[in-house]
Image (cartoon, rainbow, N blue to C red; front, side, top):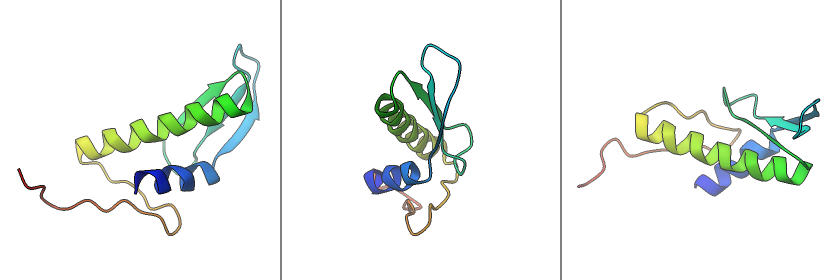
Length: 82
């Protein structure tokens, strides 16, 4: 479920080259505040995948809404058995 969500998010990523030590910058417009940079495009993409994963896990932990990305959504149970 999370892997599919990360892949869907990466499919919506936008990238640009910026003036920085890590010139490749990527973000997910649908996920506010999710961005990463890297020395190469591939490194940027890997860093962006980690940022998405962290954002999803933090959203789950805080009970924040996680928007659907096209057909891919994360549905959480209302109550988790202890």
